Amino acid sequence: MRISARADYAVRAALLLAVGERSDPLKAEAMAEAQEIPHKFLEGILNDMRRGGLVTSQRGVNGGYRLARPAGEISVADVVRAVDGPLVSVRGVRPPELSYSGPAESLLQLWIALRANVRSILEGVSLADVASGRLPEGVHALAEDPAAWSNP
Image (cartoon, rainbow, N blue to C red; front, side, top):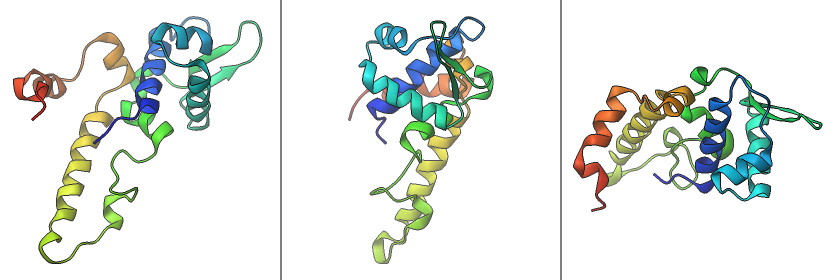
């Protein structure tokens, strides 16, 4: 699985909004500068997130962006899907739409299992979890495994 720059930037911008949930709206320029994200690229990402119902925008001098729902109700998966579409695809196709034959027949089950694990992690972690530094225990346990940090 590959996390795109769009998804990484979107999550980082959403986390800034999660931290400032109760304050004034944040301007795209300020978010871009704070996270070293190209401003124009971030504007497009924020528009996708707005269309996806994750953020709201306010125009004017005091304008900017806010989360559309509490940070605890928005999963990392929601953000990734808003900017990149399905969490797992094979050649741009969702796994249930694939079929294989012969020795590759059981490959479909592998792709489905991969998707289920990715969903389990990304849907089980909210923006509030990440922003507070309190990740779910299962995520913590996976990240503490030294093998998770190596690139075979």
